[in-house]
Image (tube, rainbow, N blue to C red; front, side, top):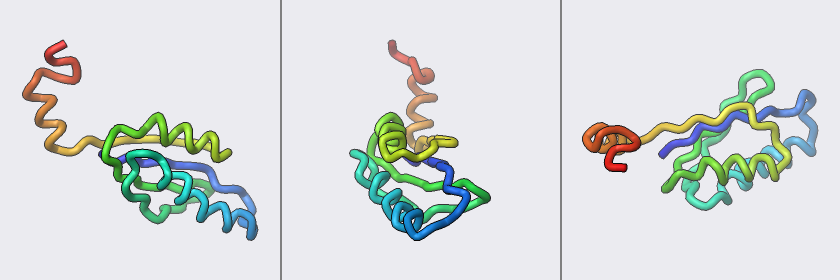
Length: 97
């Protein structure tokens, strides 16, 4: 599973912010199930990280962002093609229930 997270960066980039920027990787990488944190894509006041996970870690990622005192702007996820195919075969997300 891939999770894409966008957080707000401060208006003024200070040495303190630079130290925390590294901490963002640590905060996101420390979440159970997160295997890889990409370098951020920066656009305006937003930083977007791509996370590869071994499980659905969306709730834990959100919790880590809030506890890290970061502003969460957006969270998206994508399933693998194999997972999408399986869900289609078994009749949708609630197939078999």
